[in-house]
Amino acid sequence: MFTLPCVIFAGGRSSRMGEDKALLPFGGYDTLTEFQYHRLKKLFKSVYISCKSHEKFSFDAPFIEDTPTSQTFAPTAGFVASFHTLTSEAFFAISVDAPFINEEIIDTLIQNDTKASDVDATIARSSHGMEPMCGIYHRSLQGEFEKMLQEDNHKLGFLLKNAKTNFVSFKESKPFTNLNHPHEYQEALTLT
Image (cartoon, rainbow, N blue to C red; front, top):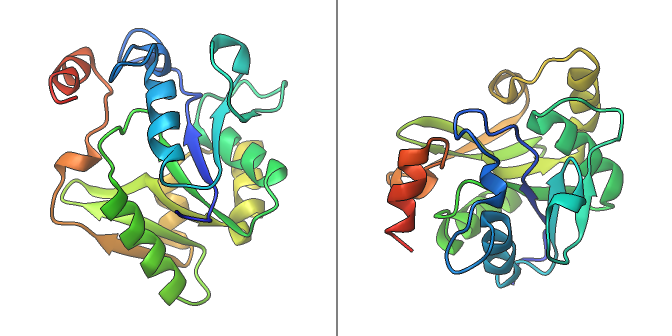
């Protein structure tokens, strides 16, 4: 079991899906968020859910809510809230809409993170490119995230290119499939 905390990011706007994808039924659970939470609880000692408000969820879990004044639906707000809430030096970040990222990928990222010294992040890279919402973020980036939030800049790719980022390449791209559009969600339902 991984001792590094895991944060599931479920506070997005879901504009491409047309409805809140965090609340879509999935894998025998009422919501995709609940599916991810129970799946990842088997791998990590502690799992948190980053969101705007926990009130939209009908199950119990440790929630990390964005600051009430934040109108930002980008992960930036969730990163700032997570660094303020957690006491750990780093945490594993995963998007709620990536239900196929498996234990092998997570383990590979954690192993590569512990081998690297003096890094700000260890992030997956697939054939699609960098996967900013699948990786380990260190507290050394907290100030950068706070600055990005203040400046309304939410480009994780830009941050990671300019930080000390350890990219780990994976040959398979299928596990990194994000459920952004209705057809991707429907296809994913056939795989569970």
